[in-house]
Amino acid sequence: MDKLEIKGGWNELKGKIKQAYGDLTDDDLTWQEGKDDETLGKLQQKTGKTRDELVKWINSL
Image 1 (cartoon, one colour):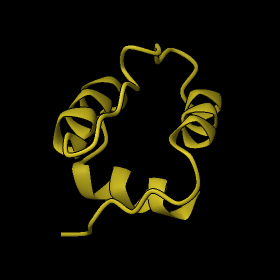
Image 2 (tube, rainbow, N blue to C red):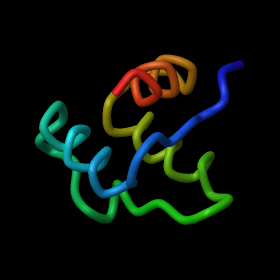
Image 3 (cartoon, rainbow, N blue to C red):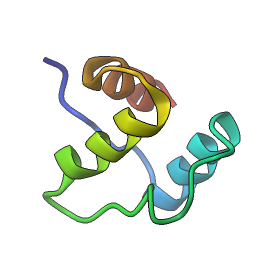
């Protein structure tokens, strides 16, 4: 399983994610240190993608 690697600031990534998935809210994209799984779980519910797909996509941003 891939590990989530946040490059740059979360706010920058959050903007890119919101561009790709316009129906996501700021609450969906709230990220806290050590809560990667919780944030990814919310994104999985909203996007229908698997955890591995999301991690790979976020790491590529």
